[in-house]
Length: 628
Image (tube, rainbow, N blue to C red; front, side, top):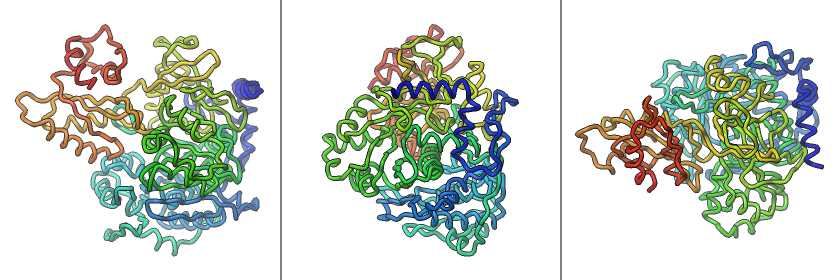
């Protein structure tokens, strides 16, 4: 029966998308309701609900208060690293957001302006995002683990009127000061914001000396609240979120207001079975797409309660943290990355810590961000006694492409598969010539155009780059950059990246950016960075370097210097620790480095050696170092 319900929903969406999505649009409160769903005039760049207007913040907060749910918890803040627990009702959140929007407006922020948010997992980060949405401004959240160079690149691309930051982040190993990182980034940028607003944290208060710097709390108390949300077009941008590109230049994924609100409100119920009043604990960061979609927007749009967690799966204080959070707050669903569960499993292999907590409220564990290996899938399912549901999507799509629709039509789960394409997505596996491959044959995973609402509209100020990066290799398709296959039942299996972006603990990072850092070292003649399979993090970067002739430096010193450089330029999030010196790098006759072949060797797989390889002996000579 569930399979029939799923097929009926998918077929209806595929064959009558206008009817399907206009029906889902009724989940959203519009200022001017849509009469049309899809605008194809600009194909291959599509627009959803082109004739409609709304305000995302009003849908996420105001309407729940107006509907009589003002006393329902909106955000539960649980921060073991700062020993803090508190909750904000929808009414309290609305008051904070009105004040923050008034604060930003007082600094000159208005509809269409950009605001960069560089904050840890604190409630003010969510408030800042919603305040931007209230004004019709465009926020761009930058993960707090990024180093100055990465932050500077994003500031120069987004050109924000204001930067909102915090004085520090808190990690289990200590305080991470954000102000020096921000100052260093602004020293690198061509663009300079009009103002910097800093949330002072008790663990690391800082002195504000520049006239453009303002204290968050001081400004907030003097702000004139923004009572009326700004009306924006459904096609206007809500946010920019940067994702790594293979060139090292980040790509600013643009998310619209209308399609985003419709897709996330529908998906949270249909895929995650989370509805008004339910509690969702998404253990991610607001700097990543999972945080945008399923910590902030989807739960609030749906009228649910979202847990904002500042901590780690282990070490805050131990491997029972997730289970304690779920028990304390009566969580219905947990959503995290397989890396987190692997870390917990490593510390508590028998799952004894699970038994200490009342998890009777927990119905489902959702996992995404990287490949879910069968061992982790089985361990979590057996120990927790609830369905472990994989789902697959990308920063660009904003919500699941393939999933098991737990709220609409639960289907049998298969280890290693995120299940089936979600209504709105037509998933095909193509060969090199663009022909559709039969079940069981691995190829490039592609999505037939148009993509559904809520997916990327384009790249920020780079329509041509959007088309060339995603839409040109296979006409009529969006190229995901992942490889895999469909089985006879239509279940998707995602096997890994086909480009030079690696996935470290659910974080997509550019190998090109890391290679640029290594290549700048005076001892390095040539280098390559590959992602190597890792039991805990999914993949970790390994640097292969060729030294300049006559260079005298020990491997220990070289490794120390390169690791420090990557940490400074990219950030600790890269987890770059492994450097190998080789005599040469394997290449094709045209000079392309065989990264995929080296990665296969490092992972212990049978390598694909192209017939265009320049010198097979080079690959043979470095194989022992790759396989160590």
